[in-house]
Amino acid sequence: MTFIMLILTFAAMYYCMYLGKQGKTFKIRTLPAIQAIPEAVGRAAEMGQPVMWTPGIAGGLNDSTQGPQTLAAISILEYVTEECVKAGVKIAALCPLPDALPLVEETMRTAYTAQGKPEEFDDEFIRFFSGQSAYMTGTLGYLQRERPASTILVGGFYYESVIIAEGGNTIGAMQIGGTNNIHQMPFLAATCDYMLLAEELYAAGAAISGNPDALGSIKGEDMIKLLLVAITGVGFLLGAAGITFIADLLGM
Amino acid sequence: MSQLIRREAVFAITGIVTVLMFVEYFFFPQDWIVASTIRNWAVIILNISLGLGAVRLIMQHVIGTQRRRENWQFSLLFLVAFVIMLFTGLAGYLSTGVATSNSIYNWLFNHVYTSLGATTYAITGFYIFSAAYRAFRARNVDASLMLIAGCFVILSNAPVGEVIWSGIPVIGEWFRFVGQVPGMRVFGVVGALGTIAYGFRALLGKEKGFYAGGAEE
Image 1 (cartoon, rainbow over the protein chains, first blue to last red):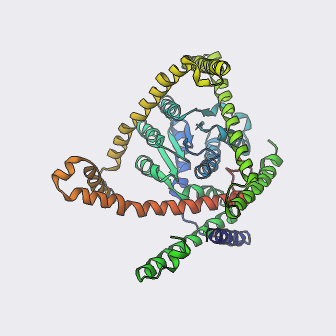
Image 2: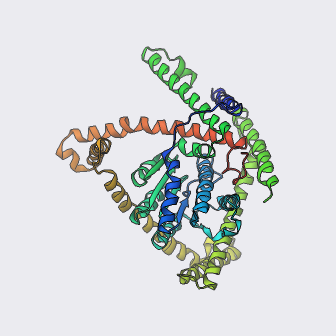
Image 3: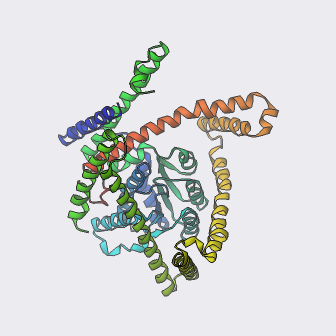
C-alpha cells in the first residue's frame, strides 16, 4: 500500500508539473512569511544593521527526516541573500551543521554572483558553531553584539529554537521562523512575527522560484492531501458502521 | 565549482542513490549490501565534513586574532582550548588507543564542557517562560482561547490544580490528548507529504537549495 501511495503521489506531482510546463498556471496560496522577507531586508537596510539566517541544529544532511528541512532552508537563504545584495545589507549565516557548510557557502556565493557583485562576498559571512550549546550561546552573543534588524530562523530546530528566537525578541528583531519539527512549532509560533509551518517550509523554495512546473508539484501534493482526507473520512464512517475494509487496507 | 559538477553530477548521483534506496526499502526485507555501503559512505563523508567545520573555525579565529578584531581575546581563548583538547585527546589515543583515557581530557570534558552545556540547557526554562508570557496575552479571541487552554494544562500538571477543582486535571488531559494530538498529526502527515514533494523536485532538478543555487530555472 505504501508503495502504491508513493507512486500515486509521484504520478500526481509529475502530472501537475507537466501541466505547468505546458503553460497551465496554478494558483498557490500566498505564504505571508515569504512575502515578509523583502520587508525584513528593507528594515535592515533602513536601520543599517545585518540580517541573520540560521537553519537550526537538527537538520544534519545525513538525517532523512531532518536533512530536507536544512535543504529547504538553504533555498530560502538564496532568496534572502539576493534581497540583501540588492539592498546593500550585510547577511550573516550562522550554521551549526558542518555538512551543510559547503552548500551554504556556494549558495551565498551564487546569489552574490547572480546579482553581479561576486567581489562583495566574504566567507566570513558564514559562521560555524560546533555543538548545540556552542550554537545557542554563540548565536545569543551574535544577537547582542551585532543586533541584527531581522532574523530568519528556518530549518530543523531542536530546543535551541526558543532560546534563539527569544534572544531575537529581546533585541527587537523582526523574526521569520519555519520548521517541520512539530515539537518546536509552538516555540517559533510564539516568538516569531511570521511562520512557515510544516510543508510550507518545503513549498517556500518552489513558491519563491515561481517556476510553473515546481508550483505544479505543490498542486499535485494538494491533490494527494485531498485524497488522504477523503480516505480518512470514508474510513471513519465505514469504521463507525463496523466495516474495517479501509483500516485493513492501510494495515491499521 | 563548475556548472557540470554543481548540477549534472549531483543530479546523476541523486538519481542513482534514490533508486537504490527505493529498491532496498520496498524489495529487500533486510539490509541490502549495496544500499548499506552507500549509507556508510554518507556517514564517512559527514565525519570528514566535521573536519571541514573545524578548519573553518580555526581559520576564522586565527585571522581574528592576527588582525586584532573586536573581542579577539575570545578567539585566542578558543584556539588555546582547541589545541589543549586536541593534544590531550591525541595523547590518550596514542598511549591506550582510547581518546577518553587521558585524565586531563576527561576532566575538561566532564567538568567544563558538560557543565557548561547543562547550564545552557537549564536556562531554557526561563526562555520558555518569557515566550509563553508573550504568547498567552489575551490580545484577541484566538489568543484568549489559547490562554484558557494553557491555564488548564498548566494547572493539570501542578498538584494545586486538583486541589482547586477535581475537574481541572480531566480537562487539562483532554486538551493534551484529544485537542492537541489530531492537530499535531495533521502537521506530521502534511510535513511528510512536503518532504516527498521536496525530494521529488530535487530529483528532477527543480530545487535551488539542493543544487546550491544551480537548479534548473
